[in-house]
Structure formats: C-alpha cells, structure tokens
Length: 462
Figure (cartoon, rainbow, N blue to C red):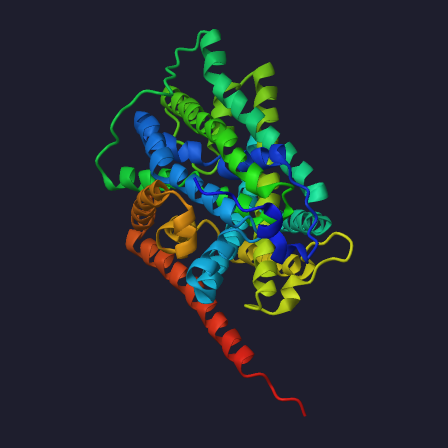
C-alpha cells in the first residue's frame, strides 16, 4: 500500500481560496445516505418482483463497489475540491476534465428539477384524496417550487455551516421514513393481515425487455458517491473521513434498498395495486397504515420524505455549484463563476446561474433523463487509463474492479434507452434520450472550444 500524501500538501493549491471547512465524518455519512438512497428506486426494483434481491446484489458488486473503490483511492491521492472533475482533468487533460464537469453539472441540475417535480405528487398523498388535483395545477406548482428554489439558493450562499444541518436532518428523516416502510409489513402481520414479506429471497428476473430495462435502472441506482468528493475542500479531514464514510454508509444504504423494496413489493402483491414509480413509498405506506392511528403514521412518513427531497436537492445543488467554481480556478470558464462571497466563501455567481437553469428545466419539463451513467464511466476509467503516477500508487485490483464497473455502466446506458413504463413510441423515447445526451455534450464541447479559442487570441489593448 502506497503512502498517503499529507493533506496539507495535497490541498495546497486550493487552500489559497480559503474555503470554509465544515464537514466532519458524521456529516459525510449522513450525506452519503441522503445522496445515494432515493425513494423512487425501491419502486423500480419492486417492479422486478422477487428478483429484486439478486439485482440489488449485482448493483452492489457491479457498480457501487467499483464506484466506491475509485472514489476512495482517487480521493486519497487528490482530496481536492471538485472531486471527479479534478481527477479527470489531471488524468486526461483540460478538455476531458471540462466535459466531465459539464456532464455532472448538467445532470445534477436535471436531477434537482426531477426531485422538485416529485414534491406535488408526494404532498397529494400526504394531504389526502381531496388534494389529488394539486400535481396537475402547473401554475400553483411552479409558484411554490420557485419559492422553494429561492430558499435553496439563499441556503447555498450561506454555505455548509447551515447546509450541513439541513442535509443531516433530511438524511435522518429519510432513514426514519425507510424505518417505517420496513416496519410496515410486520405491523400488518401483527394485525393479522395475510401479507407475504420476503426481502432476501433469490429469484431470477423475467426474460423480457421491460425486465432488462428495470435491471438497467437498478444497477446504477446507487450512484451519488461522486458528490461527496466534489466538496472535499470543505471537509475537515477529506483524505481520512471520505473513505471512512464509504465503509460506514454502504451497509446502511443497501439494507434500506433491499428491505424497503421488499416492503413495497409485499403491499403491491397483497393489494394488487400497480406500483407508483414516482412515489412508491407514500403509496406503500398508505396501503399499510390506511386507517385510524396508522393513517397518521403514513402522513408522518410522507412528510419525512418531503424533508428528504428538499435536503437531497440542497445537497446536490451545493455540489454542482462547486464545479463551475473549480473550473474557473483552472481558467476553463470565466473566473466570474469563481467569485466567492466575502463572508461565507461560497460561489454566489455559480449559485445564481445554476438556480436559474433549474427553474428553466422545470418550466420546460426537461427532467428525468437517465444520464447519470455517462459520467460514471469516466469515474471508473480514471484508475485504469489515467495518470501513470496515479496508477502506480493505486493497487492493481482497483483497476480490475473499476473495469467491472465500466461494463455494468455501459450495459445500463444501453438498456436505459428502452422505457420500462408504457410510452406511445419506444423508438422516439430512445432517440430523444440519446439525442439529449449528445446535444448536452455538443453544447459543452462547443463552449469549451470557443472559450479556448478566445483565451488563445486575446483582444489587443488599444
């Protein structure tokens, strides 16, 4: 095992910016659970029936562990603000580093818009049938979401001194909500409901395209580790604590995934109700605690999920706003994006631009594209093909396990073009998805080339 470089030396180039170091080990563990465990994934996995346990195990071995190994070792060597962007830039050069940052940034903004779009549906479950009209009232929904987005941006400007408490509370709310979901089948059995709960049985998935599409979604559902490393420059001890947080958070995340999916599946099979892929946990809890005091528990759990959604949006937003900041430090984009608030030391211009684009995504309903796999390839590829110095310092087995992660990611990318939901034209869906990914990257590369050309040919002074 190679010697870990001193943190002071590794971080020296970024220390000049005087970022506020707020995150300790506990904050990082809570953040991982918040960012990795999404409420919708247990519904998608439940669509696989009793094959869910096997597929979650494949996701753990084929995607999460390679991702975790890459983040763990690359962060040990380069515990710097920007995380994946910095690693890719140092391994492959400015152009690739910029495109990695561009993809993570663009995808993060789309994810935030997607997360916000879940709020009306989950609120309608919590409020009851008389409020089922809310998700369809676009004017009301957009007004409320605009207010929430403004609060999110203000919180991001204040920084992690406030934000980490928002994230920790949201993560705790998520864990408690999943706890209620996991307990729900036992509650039902205690009340003599003939429900069948088996979260750990091993069955092969069905052999059809819909099953393959669901598998492709679940295999990469546990992404999110990359956001932890993006804020390494704001952790108190990034070299030590980010790696430790991966070990501590991993069993928590996958117990929540597997047992939570088992609960959704149990109530789906018992009631014969179609799975709500947007809000599976509120649906399952409404079925489980449908009357009396149980209804209050269901509403409480749904409220907890609302808190989690806001916290996850806040965390991802905080992470993606750091990417323009670090790219500005490297002069790949205008330094205007790197300007820090004089008191809070946060990138205010990057925050304002990102918030405006999230709202634009909501207006255009451009949310929900499954593009996370695109930058996961690079995260796993860096230890294999990156800097020779990095490869020498990282154990050889890490490169092999990251190779497995690339295969899993490529499979998920390919199969994700097929919709697991009923759509009018599957081919049009696939072409729209693929076209969106290519368009985003074409815009990003065009911007990079234009910026590079302007920087290389400055306007002469007169």
